[in-house]
Image 1 (tube, helix red, strand yellow):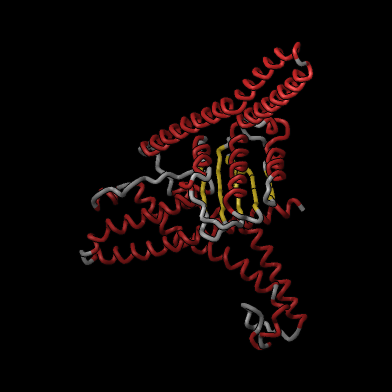
Image 2 (tube, one colour; image 1 turned 180 degrees about the vertical axis):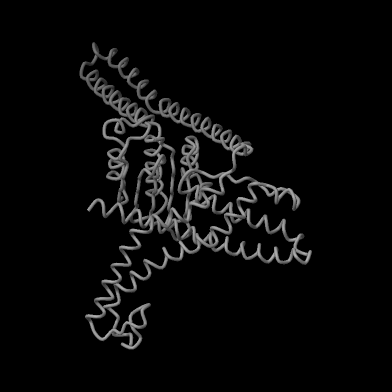
Length: 408
């Protein structure tokens, strides 16, 4: 049963990849048609003026595919603008690789996307055919099989069994089709050896700045918690102990009351100190692991929370702590701002990346600029060279997807 569940989930993920790849394949097919037209115009001598614009269009389409592939695996940086001038641009190895990718992805990727999209459609159509076969004249045949005459429920059920076959085929071949569709981009779109690493250096510089900023914010939070909470409680304990000491001889009953208040204040200080310690690195992560810690967050959430964790191997403690705080802050936002009736949290490991997805059915329209904690989540994620994607149209749903590198 667990095997079937994993295969079905892999097929759903592959379908999502393939549909996204079909979108870039349509763009690549359009760019390929434009290249053919410009090449034909160059024979007459008028197409040379169109070459720079065509190459920029190809670069734009290739960058979309780079962004898509980066969401599902190792990032592929953009090489920047196309070199100025027709001759330098055509001599550029990145441009040549992009032209090869357009031809491959516009044909092979388009075909793989169409097959992947058609299989589940055929499966649903055929499996539901016994419910509506009476609406189709017998001479019209089965769906997609015009020569197969359907004379009764038996024939309709046979078509339904065929639909199950389509579904099995879709689940079995989906991941392979996704790999076939992504292979040209993975092979041709990464920068060649010796590529100028200035973009990567700038990215790492920004990441380091974000890490330092996140560290400073965390220190200020801890200092504020200790100063405003624990320190004030301890001062109150000290004052109460002094008052009790003076009252011991004059009014023992009064001294006992003051000591009770001092004990309550000390217990509150200990509770606040434990909260601060848990905010630095939750002990539950070491005791129960990431799955157990997230299970505690989901159980304590005021909005019904469905949790799915598929992490077979422990990640680094800092990565697990980041994932824990991401989910904790996301659930806090859901409770405070979304008006949702349910929230789904999915955590899984794919290769060397930990994927965290939080989806709620609230009102949507989440904005990082409104001080909802999303900016803090992004900074914490980027400090670990991770990525955060937020989708929140007005009316919902809101989906936050976080990727964290976790090594092998």
